Length: 302
Image (cartoon, rainbow, N blue to C red; front, side, top):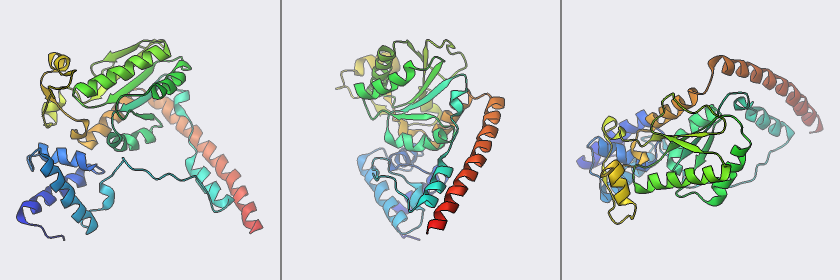
C-alpha cells in the first residue's frame, strides 16, 4: 500500500471509499464529493492535491485505474478486422433492434460537459438513447443536425438536460432550446421537473432539466459557489435563482445515472419493451446462423 503523510493518508482513504461506491468518476467529480463530505476545502491547491494523491494510488495499483476516467481525450482510428471471421464476431456483438421506432415517444439526453456524458453513457447505451454533448454554447451546425432529425419525427419528443446551476449553465441551455425551436419549427416547452404532466401533442417538444436543480443543494450537500458578478448574466440569474451556483459534476455519479434511467423508463411501456426484446433475440439468432456460415467459409480459405 502506498505510504502517505498523515494529512494525505486520510485524503487517500476517503477518496478510495468514495470511488469504490461511485466509480467511475472524473477527478473533478471526486474533488466535489470530497469537498461536500468536509474532507478538503474548495480551493485550487486542494484540487491539485487530490490529483497528486490519485496519481500515486493508481500508479501503485492500490485502486483500479478504471475507477477514474478522462473523457476529454480520445483515440481516433478507422475500424479494421483480421478477417471475415473477426468481422462476423463484431457484427454479431453490435446488432441491436431500434426499439424506439415502435414506442410512443422519442427521448434524448443532453449534457453540458464531456465528463457528465461519460458518467451517464452506460445508461443511455443500455436503453439505446441518443446522448448529446453540448460542450458549451451550441453551434448552428450542432443544433441544425438535431433539428433535421426532429422535423421527421411526428410523435412527442422529450429532451432531458443535465447542466451547471450558474448563469452560463442556464443561458447556454436557453440558447440551445431556442435554436431548436426555431430550426424545428415547433415550440419547445420547458418544465421545472420530471413530473408526469407533459404535452403529448406531437407538434410540441418537452424539455426537462434533470440537474442541477434548486433542491439538489440541500439534498446532496452541494458545494455552493458564488455568482461571478462580472458575468453580464449575473443580475438576471440572481433575480431568478439567488446567489448560489453549483456544477453538475458535484452531484454523485450514481444519482445522475439514477435520474437518467428513471426519466427514460417513464417512456417505456413494460409489455411492449419485453415483446421487442423477444423479437431482437430471434433476429440475433438468425444473424448468428448467417454469420456462422460466413466464418466457416472464411476458415476454408485459410
